[in-house]
Amino acid sequence: MEIKLIKLIIDKLFFIEDPGKLCRLPYPGHPKGCPNWDKSPNCPPSAPKLGDKYDLSKESFFVVNPFNIGEHKKKMKSAHPEWSDKQCACCLYWQNGVRKKLKEESQNFCCGLNLLYPELKYDFNLIPEAMGVDVFETAKYHNIAIERNPQNILYKVAFVGVIKIDDHNNSTRAAAESVG
Image 1 (spheres, rainbow, N blue to C red):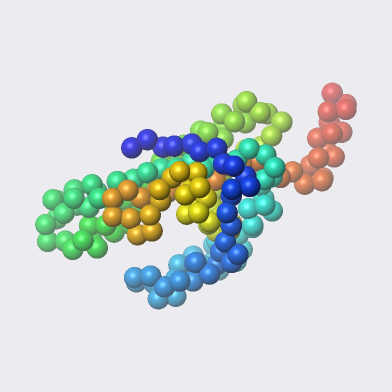
Image 2: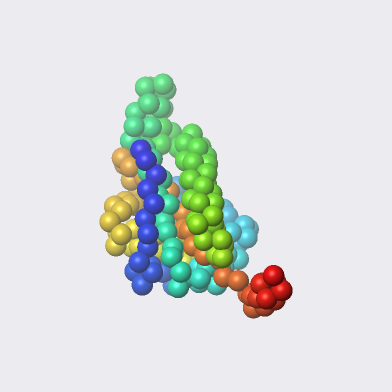
C-alpha cells in the first residue's frame, strides 16, 4: 500500500481540547492509559500545542501510511495457528516497521520541501494527536477513512508543517541578509 500525501486545508484542521484525555483512557493491558503519558517530552502534558511549534498560516500536510492489519493477522495466524486473534494483531510484530516507513517518508518529503522553499523550515511530527490534532476528524474531512479499532486497514499519520521562527532567529536572519 502506498503512502499518501494530503495537503491540509488549515481551517479544516480539527483540534482536541485536552489531548492528554485520550492518552489517559484505559485500553487492554493499560488500565491507566498510555505508558508514555507524562514521561515522554513528545507526549502530553509536555508536548507543545501544534500552533506553538508550527506556523499554521503556511502550507501543511498529512503523511498517511496505510497498513493492512487484516492481511498481517492472516499471515501471523498461518505461521502460528495456535495464536489468538489478539496475539496475531499484536503491535510488537508490525508497529516499528510501519513507524519507520512513516518517518522515512516524512523526512524525505520535508527534505524536498526544504529544497523547494529554502526560506522556510519544514519539519514533521509523528504523533500529531499529542500536539492536539484531532486526526480522525481532520482525516475524515480530507477524505481519509480512518477507523477506530480497524480490522482491515489502519493508518499511521504524521503532520508536516513550517516550524515557527522566534523573534531572535528572525532578527539574526534579517541582519545576515542585509550584510550579504
